Length: 118
Image 1: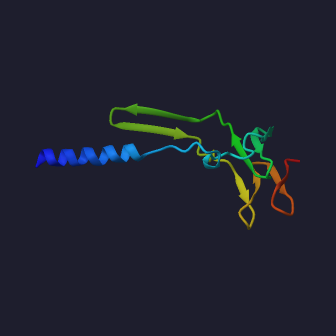
Image 2: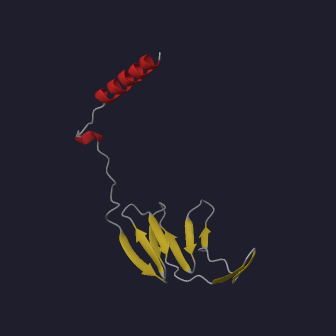
Image 3: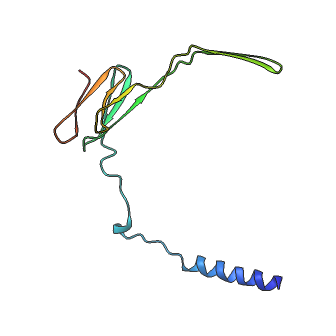
């Protein structure tokens, strides 16, 4: 019985591997349209990347972290400054980002980024 199960599993796995094929037709390939052609700049310490279709992305490089920790056996004491270091992002009623920290973001009538910063 054990040999029969092993033989059946080998046949099923062998045929599924044998039937696999790869398509190299150009119609089956996927491309990331225009995401290599972004305009990247820094405004008030925030790096923005604006794409040709009007979308944007941002990155805040925060290198500092304020805190202290002391361990005494089973007792641990930690301290941080209590400040929320997350990025302040403000949205409009439709969910579009209109402000990142102190940098305003302006859109055109069609919802594409028109201007970032003053």
